[in-house]
Length: 228
Image (cartoon, rainbow, N blue to C red; front, side, top):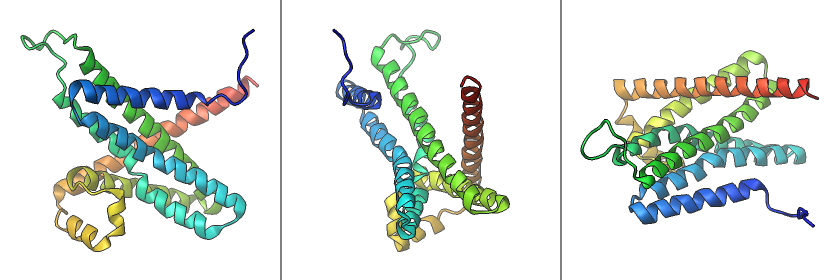
């Protein structure tokens, strides 16, 4: 007789294990370290959601200091989610055409699996990051008047856009902020028209992505209520 174990692991555990194994297999077969880098970047992109969940727990304990500290850490780590989009540049090192012509796609399975690994990483990272931002936004709406909440959201977009530029071009990480002198020295020498344009472009992309995510989330909630 078939039965389901009461304490069986959540399906996300199996999905995570599968993704990790695929990434390791790709690295072993192709010798491309980018597949390990992508795995690490996916982990960093999920840190903001973990921090937000911890914030919700601290709210229940009414610990304002820890809640504020987690909020600052969230802002520091959130840009790791939209940063994942720039990892698509690593596809340039993967061949998708035959060597004879660019009109015929390769049948190399590992090339296509590499595409799936990077694409899946971007989807997971963006979904997790936008969900954490949605929770943060609604915390603002509960505690601030609407104009201030929207202004705070806009500042997050701009900060995230600048952080994507800093991470991709200056190769600085979230934890480099804990070394402010070195961090400020690095970024002050790279303020130019391109860095500003790229940062604003990235900020716009984050804003558009969040708007789309919010609409989809609200639509799904409305459909769910209709079927109750």
